Length: 414
Ligand code: HAM
Picture: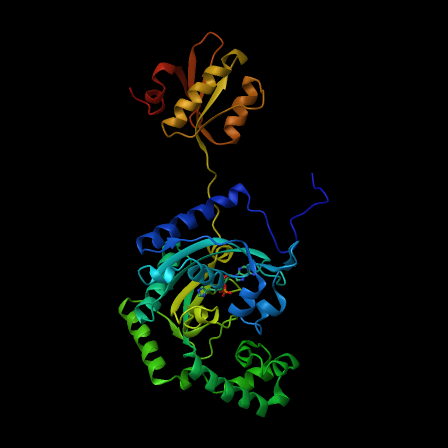
């Protein structure tokens, strides 16, 4: 039954069988976020292009190559959101959230869009869930958000997760460090790939990400940000680590950790899963103390993360059992349709999952259908008004009193 239409490249349909695992994941995440005081926020699926150019950074791959940008009929440039932090900071400013009790703790889930080369774990429309704590510079906030992602992955049972932790320092220290790094890269230009060489002055940190042997050799002797932290930044980072130690959260210090977005300052982190292959990052984030100011607001420190729902599900690789139904109401005679509908409604209102035939099948066809959809019991309404209850597992069948339907369902007297 294939048609010429397919989901666009890099996108996918979430079918009912896959929706169950997603619903479980979201329910667990929502519980964790709510108990920690992170309230839900929803922002539009598209924003002014300028927001991402300024927020995410013009030199990033996201802005240079991966945005779905279009003009509306008023010739305004809009972009399908590639990430959620810049939009949330935009909303924080637009709605004067700095007047609320700080920090403002927000959580979100939804679709995001990046024009990347599709492969397992990397899509053009994907889903993130995430949290942001805006309006606090305390290392406690860094530790809290990291713990919440650790809790989420733990509660879901994601195997083989490693937390990598680094610090990029504050903006001034980082600027000085970047000059030092650029000088190092210029000294070794001959050993770099063209791509890395071209970006020495635009985004030298990305050289740490290269998998080219020559570049890796150069980076092995490069100065690292961790060695260049200012005293305040080093102290902040030490406190974050001490809080994670106290909470029993294991991590690997990664002096060359970088992220693909420009707004990060100080703490950055990445949760990776060893079974995921090339796209191994399940979720990550960090501090972005300069972003709100960059968007035209007052200096407002903040920290958060986002995790990829598809990557978590890939790492879990679980088959969710079929849903099943508590009951199916079958009719031996079309005259019983109205009665069947009333009984189905009674069952649903009492909290049972219940269905009846919507396809005009004969009784045999209805019983087959009930079996296919995993009904535990079938109530058969006979033409004479009597009823039978069949247990679909044992095949046992007995007369049933539809006046005491709920009692019949629980096997005892109502
Ligand atoms: P990000 O690292 O760009 O950060 O994305 C977060 C997560 O989204 C990744 O760890 C990955 O699991 C998932 N992801 C990213 N791109 C794709 C893709 N093409 N296909 C499937 N999954 C993908 C951010 O977006 C930041 N806003 C995180 C943050 C929040 N930082 C501070 N607060």
